Length: 332
Image (cartoon, rainbow, N blue to C red; front, side):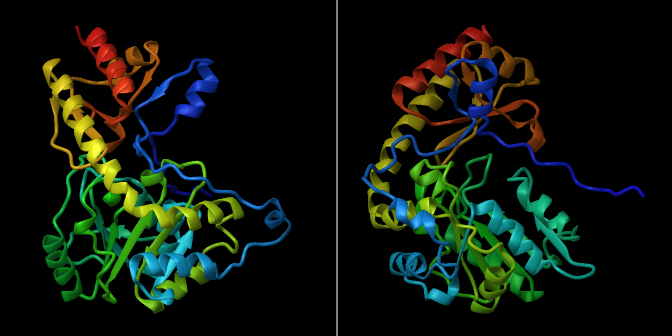
């Protein structure tokens, strides 16, 4: 018997694997995390490891509720935002003849998770679930809240669900979030990974209608948020206001980095967040290989359907200088 099965999605953030393979201290511009995260002390009492986590995550959801002013029953949590995407699709796209829509280019996990649930792609005015990434990955485009509310209205007109992934919103413009919008046809996904630069912890959370949240919480694996992730998240939610300083620093470095890249004859797409999509005007695979020889890892956007583009994270001033020097050496 032959099974038709989708391929695994290609992602950035491969710095650990590349460092282990090359035995070199690479600078990872393929992972778009906050280069200026809030700094605070936190700890996980080792005694917590002797017990299963509270699978209702009562204290954690209470902290999220206080931060975002959403009721406990409208909040779900998971082992990273991708687990929530997968579980959401299992719930919302379960059954025969379910359909989904995503814009392109965008984060590939929406389509993969939808197809794993048996759904098929269709156009936006018919889909059972429409996925949108705001700001979008890899383009950095930020959709305005009013525009998204109009999109939600269109999705509701045919009884669909709008899934809005706001993983980067805290590093862009949180005033455009839909996290404060309560609507039975809306699900909003958030993550601490990008904002607090902690991809190793794996923690995501989302907001939606209580009936949908209940199904997601039932469907996700029990105890999927471990004790270390829970301890960090409980503290991190008390430092969300400090992200305004991160946004200001990122904006300054983003402008400086884009100016430097443009001066090399490459095209930077306008970005609202902590990464830049760069069009190099040719196949970028040789460039990515050459940059690795300079200990620089960037995101090859061929898997997004953009073979002439790379995505580079906005990092610290010194790291951005290293990227500009390596790009100059590899393009001239």
